[in-house]
Amino acid sequence: MATASGVSAGPVLQLPSRRAGGRSAASRVPAKGLLPWRTAAGAPAGHFSVKRDVVYNGRSYHHQFLPLKQREGLQAAVMPVTAPILDDEGKRKQMAEDYGFTQIGEELPDNITLKDVMDTLPKQVFEINDLKAWTSVLISVTSYALGLFFTAKAPWYLLPLAWAWTGTAVTGGHDCAHKSFSRNKLVEDIVGTLAFMPLIYPYEPWRFKHDRHHAKTNMLQEDTAWQPVWQKEIESSPLLRKAIIFGYGPIRPWMSIAHWLIWHFDLKKFRPNEVPRVKISLACVFAFMAIGWPLIILKSGLAGWFKFWFMPWMVYHFWMSTFTMVHHTAPHIPFKSSEEWNAAQAQLNGTVHCNYPRWIEVLCHDINVHVPHHISPRIPSYNLRAAYESIKQNWGKYVNEANWNWRLMKTILTRCHVYDKERYYVPFDELAPEESQPIKFLRKFMPDYA
Image 1 (tube, rainbow, N blue to C red):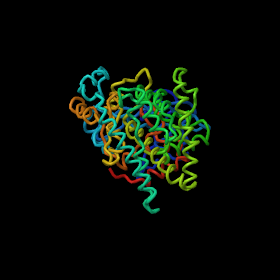
Image 2 (image 1 turned 120 degrees about the vertical axis):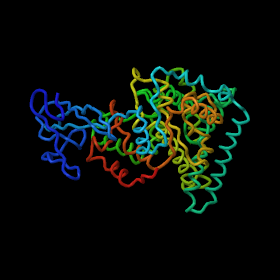
Image 3 (image 1 turned 60 degrees about the vertical axis):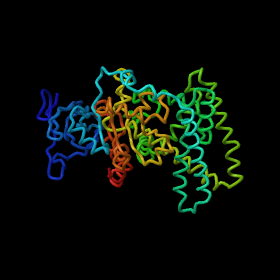
């Protein structure tokens, strides 16, 4: 076993010394291993596992190097960043500052179950209130109508504001999918279908896949909201690698468009008993495309279709992507295999409460109060804040909280890429530095304000 100070058997493998400015004195050969930094140059052919002690905030931690890989006869050993240690309050505070959080919670003990957490919630937060439910519909419909009116009347330089409002206002229908809107399930399905139809979003396919996201949050290969990239995907082909890097980097706030296309229109992705309902939803959205789009174009031309439908639709997908990212993605929040996955940890520790500008929270019906929404999707949106107050009182030290900010988004877009069991995530520019210009661009030019 090779170590930082030598080798127990076999040829010697030395870590390079460091000159001023962090450049390696042993940089005779450029590294082509997994990571481009802290490489062991001049290593003999073969496979090695290197260890060394790492100091973080004055504390020493022992870590395993990633395996040394052979690429065209050149070997490189790399040192991963520490997997977060959440039982250290000082480190959690430092991580929160680094990542753009206001609080990073302690890890929930393994013996705590999701039922334990749910049992502490007041029973009234699960109650459906018809008046409040229909008020939320009125808010969505009125806000959307005002957005379209603003779009029609606004001068060109105010159109981005009109699109931002309109696309945010059309994010309703969520409670219907979780059966927390009405006691009448037919009414729920009708309202949900109508809410999703103008977005060309099939309601039933989204409901089926979204329920699985709630049941398998942050579970590898099972969570249907999103998955980290696998290293084999990065290594499969140069073209796919570039597409993935660009998709999980600069255009990640719109990657829900790819998710929409891949997951919601293919009947093979659904169980046989789900297919009839899926077909009804597909017929509804295709009907809107066949009737609604031509009417928009007939009335206002192709420019009107772009102005009144496409741009608000893009804003809607910005929020779909952003909510998914922000509420479940951070360097300290792991994806786990089904064997290691713990429901309570995934829903309480693996979900982030994020505060947005109040107008966004109102138009999106408090979906940002995301922790209780994952503890139980049956909690109606208008009860989420009361439920979260209870969670804060009983489980407050375990929750992750943030205010939406540039540093938070920058952390996700530039760090949370390729799955690694120990590190949780490896950034693209450590695996494929020459092809990661989009990530380097974001890291250099995105603001770092928290």
